[in-house]
Length: 407
Ligand code: ADP
Ligand code: ASP
Ligand code: MG
Image (cartoon, rainbow, N blue to C red; front, side, top):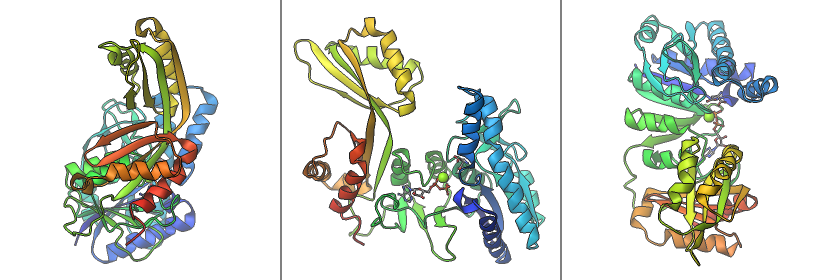
């Protein structure tokens, strides 16, 4: 007998029929003798609809109240799934995040899980119930409902698996595993049987939304066996996220390509080329709680230099305002902005032992006439900022150049 956490994403519970299919799958695991905890997302499109509704009544909705509204999507699906389970003779009980006491901090819309009280869940399981928990939500110490950020149901699943020391956490979604890149953009993308936590963490943080980054962090930290599978297929082992690197000599240098359209560039033109200028520019940006992603400072001429950095598109207006407010202190000639940037990243632990990866990436993009505006690297990834209109082309040619379409 195993204890399994199964998380079903929005598309997997998107219609009554699909909810019934989920119930059938859960029943099969229970019939095998497993104890099952199910975490569900809201029906697909529902979270977007609720956010849009909030924005119709207020330009900048209060984050606490936003969480009150947005968390209702998952409350609907836990009830529906339990009804579908009851209908086929399975004992099941639903819980919202606050009922099951998924305790979080108070950072509304992006809260972090602090603790989960596992005792009541274990009691229900031991009494033969399937326990169905609303993903994406928790409660803070004041009793306020919180949400965990977009895609946060993955993190609920992994956190429950960690708290209850489950044998496996299965993330059921609309693709049958983690691919070399988003299969919706590159049809030749290949499913990976395994991928390391390190690589999955990079892919998730660089834009592959198949797993929320915090769920991968959590699984790595608490050694949760994590697997991504399709909710639309009966069979298939999906992709296992592993600690070990594949010892296979034939392992490719690059495991995957991630991309992100959510980048905007700000350029400080003609800033004085003197010590402390990066701090003068980025200090106020950090104070305004704006995350900076890529940074580039050009070689100075005649005592002046151009300094560019990227932020999430939603933060562009705020970041420009901050720069304007500090215009005197920065002493630059002008500020420019561009919200048509995108970032493409290649990721692979194999990079550590293979030289020439960057040059192949840059040559491939050059051959297509794609201009690289910024570059950033870590031990296992290289990211470039390019114009958004070249994004899909860039991903496709890199996928081919690194032979990711070859088995
Ligand atoms: P869910 O609603 O089940 O949580 P998501 O939409 O959050 O599903 O994540 C699944 C989607 O992630 C897929 O439909 C796919 O388009 C996208 N995706 C992006 N990168 C990858 C990748 N490398 N492998 C698999 N899917 C990916
Ligand atoms: N429903 C939430 C979202 O759309 C959480 C999730 O699906 O993981 O972001
Ligand atoms: Mg998701």
